Image (cartoon, rainbow, N blue to C red):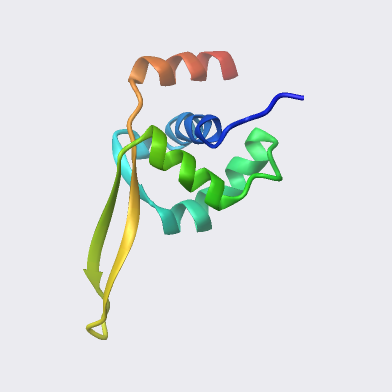
Length: 101
């Protein structure tokens, strides 16, 4: 049995996201979108149903840039969200797409 680290899952997630959703390449993805839109799909695609969102976030914080963004809700309440940079060279994405095809 191979042991995966949080960083390994995060790196795989970044590659998967950049390959499956090209519009995210070299952009920022917020934690809310990861949790609600991408996490379940990634778990299924990677075959890692036991992976937890917190472990993925910890790994992302170590393998890519992370920033806090503040915004104001419609009722005037100030909130913040965490975003992660999806930076991956186009050559790596193309290689992954060729292997998948």
